[in-house]
Length: 144
Image 1: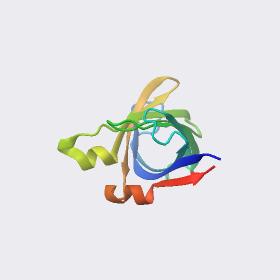
Image 2: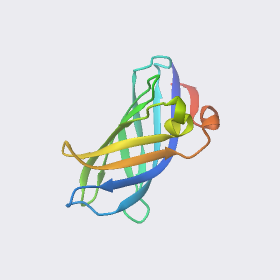
Image 3: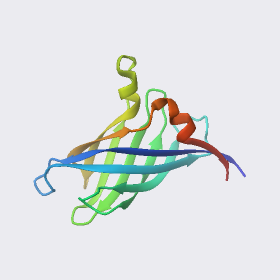
């Protein structure tokens, strides 16, 4: 058995498509993700993520999977999911910590939205809980 670090995050935000073939407007969504790794102190190690993305009135909840890479300057995310009538979407972005805007830079994740390798929109996710509670609410150790 190995000791694992488990990260549980719940973020909410919006996605806006810039491609004429996709639904217009800004669509709000909630993003729940779990990531785990036995490379606890290994910054730069890829953590597999799974979860759901929920769009409220726009679309039913769907599974999401991808990768999270923890880095000292800010974590990067690379997530994929499929929406009916739209197809497979890929969201990629990175939090960039900035001491002049510390709390917003720690809680806001700007993303680009890709479909078939082409940028078709942008999105933003915000960690809604207090940053001070993050280690207590989001991080866990477990034996696996």
